[in-house]
Image (cartoon, rainbow, N blue to C red; front, side, top):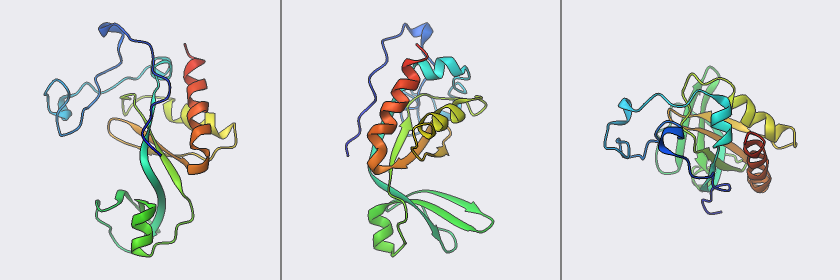
Length: 169
């Protein structure tokens, strides 16, 4: 599966655009360190009206690992819970490590730079697929939220999120 955005939002005048997006590499597109970036959009209607989603290439799975697992080499996220450590890894990394793959997911990234204090975005983007019977696991990021959906339902989830966005315009 290749990275592809949901239908592009119409061009906006600079003053109408949501907060700047981080371009990676530790700096924003304007060259400022990412820690100095505006805290992100908080208005739910604005976030949903301009929502685009990018599919990260590959297939992913959530696995429980013993002890701590380092990021890299196919391990994309790690979460420590009281009962153990969960890693989000590529299916290939899980197979290489001998981890049981119980769920194969597509990784969808919400391109909107949402504030960590934004209210309602997580609920909206998780509820929309749920109403269509699509499992959706949400991972928060500092600048973007991410959804893990069954790989075979990725196109359905993208269409569902596009309808959510189009309903806010």
